[in-house]
Length: 343
Ligand SMILES: O=C(O)C(=O)C[C@]1(C(=O)O)C=C[C@@H](O)C=C1
Image 1 (cartoon, rainbow, N blue to C red):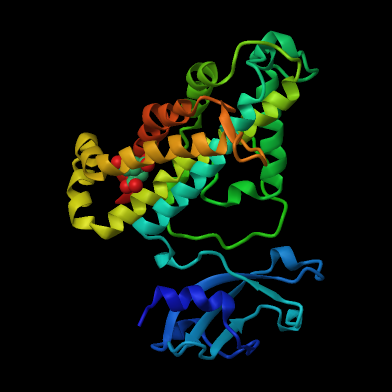
Image 2: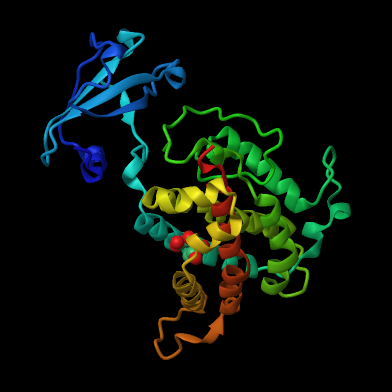
């Protein structure tokens, strides 16, 4: 009965009917004709209480294309129902993630990382950006890059960034809660995922290993711009590495019989071996280097001059970044996740 494709099409369902305040009793859930019982939040942008309202809802459907989807709601306050209610639904369905789809996502993230490398390579090393003694910002002890990252994370936390399980802050301590209406992000991951954050290793790797490879030595005074470029690149790399949680969940669901004994035996090495696909890693490294070459070349309208052999940064830095750090750390996240998977 469950068909992930039909489920995805819910976004584009041509007809749906509000059947407000039904008499449906929770005890009757799940009725046999219900394919999913979901927790939705409906946001009415014009209602002052909208951000705190959430409703239980279930969906009945006939699985033919274009069929009527009937939504039934159990509203605590029926008078809030109005035509301005906007149903919002995330990738809430479990089957949205497959090994193919998470790999596609990783491929798209490569673009963001390569552009991030190009943007950071625009500036020289600008070592003052990383010097704790240089910044001397009243009320703050730390480097300029720390100042920019911490404060941006603070603002972005209020704006809801970290309610998405794909996002992990570098400075999770004392982050404020989200101040915006919540969005029903996927519950695809095991709850243990929330305790995995290896951004301290990402941060260290970035400053100690990547920057010396990427930035030419020098100082042009653009420290704030440099820190902003660092922030974007750090966030892109972190997102990619922590996406390992989703990759691991997909792999576990595809073959629980292979993973479970290793998890129960806490066999890190065995897990690492099982989740590793050497040929995929090789392809990833090659593709990233190619992207760095293509995206990093100068573009001219004169096709004879196109590229001119000049590149905005050394493309091998991208493949080295992936080979030495991004892929190994993604695998580390996968192992950490799997070890918590059967808790
Ligand atoms: O594609 C996978 O299966 C992944 O787990 C991702 C990834 C990667 O980080 O690119 C990591 C481990 C595998 O060996 C191959 C690739």
